[in-house]
Length: 267
Picture 1: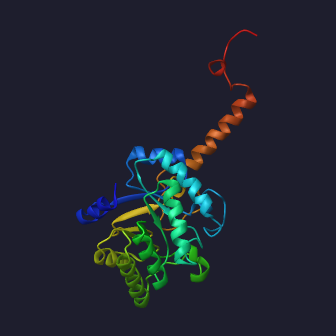
Picture 2: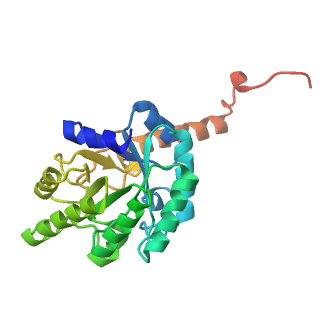
Picture 3: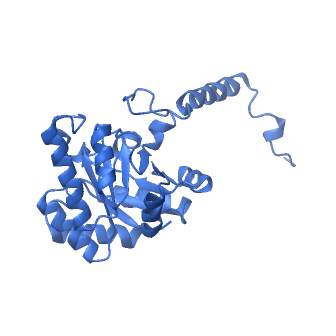
């Protein structure tokens, strides 16, 4: 998978599959099953590290987890979120941090949030330096405190026009794709129809060029998180609890380890 392949998939109307991932074992599964794109998301802060938002995640944490993902999925197109305040303060800082991610992980692209003129200038400089960039509009988690929580975007005419202008600006700045998060279906469909680059939706309806979910949410590892847009495709939390209970029960009863798990030999 390359950027050109992704552009071709949009042109042919082939849906693009994206899932987040943060570790070696799940990355191996995603690659074996043929996922198109892996996103090493800063959602790792909530679903792996236990933070209450994405804001505390560090660049070192993103790099460490991306290395693990690349070891598990060396042949899958991988995008890495640049965490909060590693690219917003200055273009020079963004170049340094994005370059470090690319050099130290072997990832194929980075993702940034926002679309104001300052961010578009940063994107232009990153792309000019040879760093592919995925954009992100709609609900942008790194600005959660500014926008007042997880709210659907694009419900008013003014908001819809703003989102369309932001998506166009990201395309003009050089993004190869854009995530639409918590955007009304009507607005997402319009943006998807007007952009030449693929749109990847999360809570943005079926008309985007692709879809992304947070893997632990999609696999039911986070059962307390139940937003409207989420479908759980497995119930691994329940299966995991069953396994843990069985282990505790068998160790306490003395049935594990059994003879088949024991090594013989002279005393």
